[in-house]
Image 1 (tube, rainbow, N blue to C red):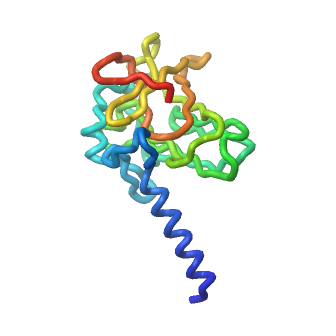
Image 2: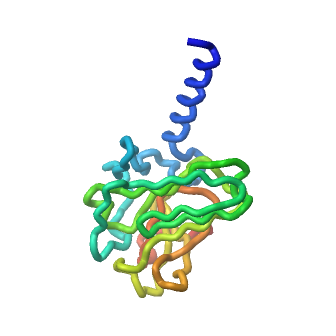
Image 3: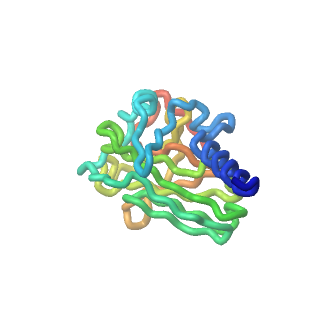
Length: 198
C-alpha cells in the first residue's frame, strides 16, 4: 500500500472518529456523553442513556406517531448557505455561517420512547457557526399546536429554554443557535429547566 493511500485512510479514520465523538466544548448540551444519540449504520436510535437522562416526558408528542424508516437526512452546505428539511424539522444556514463545505444533518430517534416525541439531533457537532443558524421543529400535529407557551429546548444535563417563534403558516417553531445538539419542543416551564440564549 502506498504511503499516500495509507495517509488518506488515516485521514478518513480520524475524521470518522471525530464526527462520532460528539461535542466537547464546555457548557454545550453534549458535554455529557451519555446524552448522545447512538449512530448505527444508516439509521439512528436514541440510546437508552439519552432516553433515560433526557427526560423526554416534558417534550411535545406527535398526535399521530410518525412511521420512520430512515431516521436521518444530510446535506453538504458551503459558505453560500443552504437548507435541509426532514420530517418537519429544518435547518436554514445563512450565507457566511461556515467557511467551508460542511455536512449538516438531522437525526431522529426511532425507539418507541423517543420517536413519538418532537426531538432531533442536529449536526455537525464541534462546529461553532460564524452566524447563527435557524432550526425549525414541527408544532402542527403535535400536542403543543396552538399553545402560545411552546418553545424550543436543547439538552445540557437538563433541558435549556431557547425560546422560539411559531412560523407564519403555523407548522414549525423556529429559533436560532450558534451550535448544534439535541433539540426538542415543549410548553412546560420550570421543572429544572434553565433559560439560555443558546
